[in-house]
Amino acid sequence: MGCISEITKGIMQIKDYLPLLNWWPTVTRRTLRADLMAGITGAVIVLPQGVAFAVIAGLPPEYGLYSAIVPAIIAALLGSSYHLISGPTTAISIVIFTTVSPLAEPAGTHYIQMVLTLTFLAGLFQFGLGMARLGALVNFVSHSVVIGFTTGAALLIATSQLSNFFGVTGSKRHAFIHVWEDLLSALPHTNPYVAAVAVVTLIAAILFRRFLPRLPGMLFAMVIGSVLASFLDAKEHGVRLIGSLPAHLPPLSSPDLSTASVRQLAPAALAVAMLGLAEAVSIARAVATRSHQRIDSNQEFIGQGLSNIIGSFFSSYAASGSFTRTGVNYESGAKTPLAAVFAALSLAAILLLIAPLTAYLPIASMAGVLLVVAYGLIDFPHIRTIIRTSTPEAAVLAVTFLATLLVELEFAIYVGVILSLLLYLNRTSHPHFITLAPDPDSERRSFINITRKPVEECPQLKVIRIDGSLFFGAVDHFAQELRAMTRDSPEQAHILLVGSGINFIDVAGCEALANEAHRLHVSGRQLYLCTLKGEALDTLRRGGYLQRIGDENVFPSKREAIDRIVPHLDPERCRVCTARIFRECAAMPGA
Image (cartoon, rainbow, N blue to C red; front, side, top):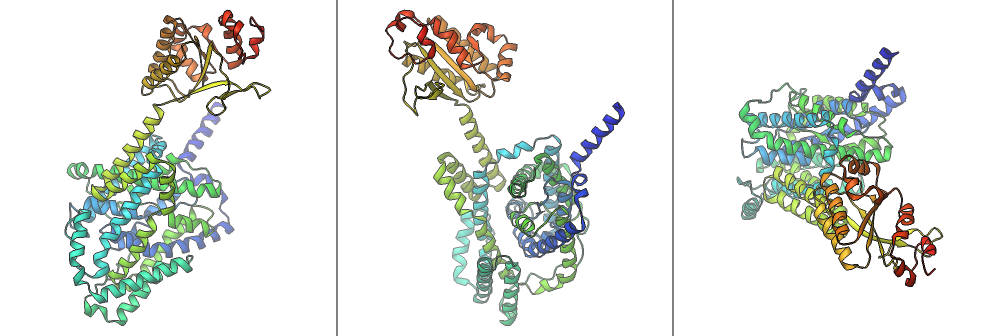
């Protein structure tokens, strides 16, 4: 029996790391048909996006399509989401360009190898975090950081494409402000043919997005721009074309794993890894709320990591979850991750068939489409909500946005994450102190917050609930608040701390409780504790702190605490008291 149990346990562990074994039995002829149709739709959607994102990343256009083939298959088979589609994304593309372009000439052989190395390292970070079961780390990349970063990235994308949009010489400088200086000085030399193609493509993309959102509008817009360029004989007037893509599957490649390259690219790789994980997990969770599926963040880390590690050997640059393609995949009726596999295979087939046609695609049309992509990145409703809801979160958004424009892009992510962590630490280090008293209008005389409903307090007993953990970062605030509250009510010689809101307590928190109990005792007062959670109570007991506080001063419930404390109140003061807020007061003198 023991052997069978071990085998069963081993099979369950394998299933944890190979989600394919969980959903494969659900595949039927009906699901295959639905996944195939969703996959073909996804392939048509990713075709113009892949080319556009590769241009943003400073890579030859075909690399955007390569990145939507192998990584998409690996991430689908090894991730936990049934609907997540991985591939190139705008945010990661702009990070790659701003990181690697100062080190090598974009689209050059050395540049491509550095991007592949960056992809491998990012995948290695992601895989390591997943194997270490650190999926919760992605929660520290707050929503405000992502919104601020993508908004800044949108402006960077639009800025980088304006020279192609107007047909002027692009800036050789990298700073956001300097690029705008060069662009404004070059605008008088705008090529009207280039601008006409770009504007028509832009308008077509907007119209398709507004009135025919289910159609691949970017693809049709680029076709319209290409037809116009051909009609105007635009090539003779300085309109540059992308050129035909190579009609073959992703070729094998080899990242440069030398010590020098790893040391140079590791910081940016970590930023790409965290950004990619934040995108993938947040998108997977968003779709899972609609499909009622449980997402395993650790498994998503592993799937995303392996997709980038393996993809880097198949000419693929850093991939992550795509919100647009994932949404289309779900709306198209996808049932299993096979839809992502079919999308990748369909894209490979399309690449082999239509690659020569891209020779007629003007760069100006690509610029027009990318402006639409950039605008779509700016989440105006969420920006308004954040500004309206929380000043600290709005500050995080604003700082991340400005850092995205003004400093190296990978550091902008770090700045936002550090600010979010500081906000989190500031909140957790300031537990709330709430004064409670029985509600005379309640049959059970339930305790309520007296600031919400003013009721009388006991003149001798103060009841305080602590909402927040007592750890090393919170002990100073805890001591200051408790001393302030006891100083303001010196006649209340008995202090009852309700600990139901204390989720965690460390050694520093235990010391603070014991020290405050001693301080109050020396001044002729008494500290009591009640309703502590099991973990907090065990920590106090193991460290011997209950003895210092007094085992007789710790109670399992508020009712038992009141029942034991009231008889110890000053009977002379009780004799003249008119409040008598506790039921136990009926047994005191003067009742």
